[in-house]
Length: 382
Ligand code: NAI
Ligand code: SOE
Image 1 (tube, protein in one colour):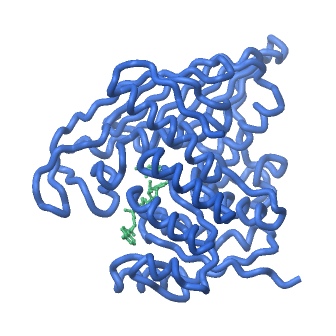
Image 2 (tube, protein in one colour):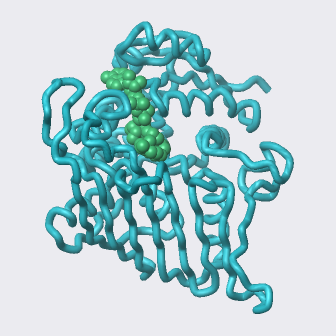
Image 3 (cartoon, helix red, strand yellow):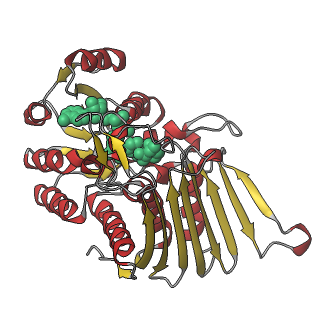
């Protein structure tokens, strides 16, 4: 049967533009679908650079204005891989034009924007997804499987961290490629929306809704030169954030993120402790899942270090032979594969925009709590 073309219009050719393009290029080689990805157009403001990118990755055409891309009738899906302050405007226009949308995280700068985005895509009835890719590292998907099977029993604790060290230098400017993360006008927040958003998405998926939070944040470097204005400007983002949370299932949680943990580059870790068993995962060793089951016979009871690479573990039958691991890029390939499967079967893949809004509600409650120094109840999606 002939496959149905899915014509992609990608906006942004930075870190995520590359990660998504790589996923589009690989998915058809490893996963079956009734749909076929067509790299129809890529858009960014610099014509020379966007042409180079299109040639390198095989996009058929370019645009330098995202509005023109969104208006094109030969585009089925808009992929938003630009800084956070552009997500809402592009998504609203794309939904209005009836396009499917894949949007990078965090969904929006704040819940107000995110609510409008959810409203727009639900009114348009277009397939949508947010790129919280860590759900689709096979070891994390396996953790979800073990929890859903009830192996952990009642959950007592959830513990997550996302540690980096790349902004310690006070001479590092804010604004521009990658460094837009330090500019509150482009990012919305600092580590809370950038890094903890990942931890929150995974946590909501694995352990259910968060009821309330209490948080502290700090901005260690108060002023930085701005790359666009050339002036020294106030830093408006949170450099570090730690928060406590109560989940609706009664479990207690701690979350921590910083860009000032010297020696750590992208140390995303989580651990979950249940009455029967515990699990732990570490992004630096992303193909392994640690599992401890108290029901094991005493003499051999210990943490198991599961090398997630076998055909009966999530996604792995589509890759190499047992024992050969896969990595970071594959989480994006899996996300595209699941999105296509959703189109094929009519059962949409998640996290969708509504799930992205749920994470934005937690981010918002965390930032409000840090400001008020009180516990804040998290708004829930319906
Ligand atoms: P980046 O700075 O590497 O790339 C941003 C791209 O956006 C650049 O190509 C830039 O030219 C383009 N751009 C900026 N303004 C534009 C405009 N008006 N029109 C068209 N293009 C424009 O940023 P990066 O790291 O790719 O981040 C993009 C998004 O992806 C952010 O929302 C970020 O939070 C998210 N992200 C998600 C990750 C994940 O793990 N899922 C990892 C890294 C980023
Ligand atoms: C920041 O350095 C960053 O690239 C985040 O923006 C991503 O979301 C995270 O996955 C890795 O770190």
